[in-house]
Amino acid sequence: MSKSGLYAHFGSKQELQLATVQEAGRIFAGEVVQPALAAPAGLARLAAVCEAFFEHLQRRTFPGGCFFAGAALEMGTRPRPRQGKRRRLPGRVRGPAPRLRGHRHRPARTSSR
Image (cartoon, rainbow, N blue to C red; front, side, top):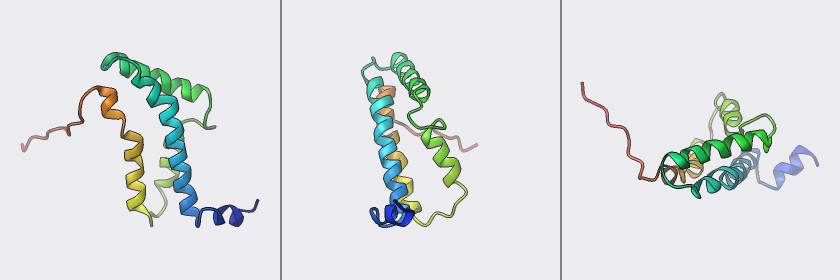
């Protein structure tokens, strides 16, 4: 299939990229986040998510290592015409993180000094 034929299925190159990131997030959640949620909250869950992440990398689910690290390096130098939508996508990947810690996320407080 040609590049233009592939892009035609998604409407544009950017839509293909967004669909790829969404699918990678779904795979990551299934292989790393969901299995870790079975562990008790706290240190055991943190250890479980780390172990699941390292196993995910060893299986080479995405050749080249962590999909998100690679995508961040590649996309970080490009213009961001769809920046608003891209900013929302990582939240989907990070969404389960507060449950991994066993408490609600609270932003770090900064002193006014």
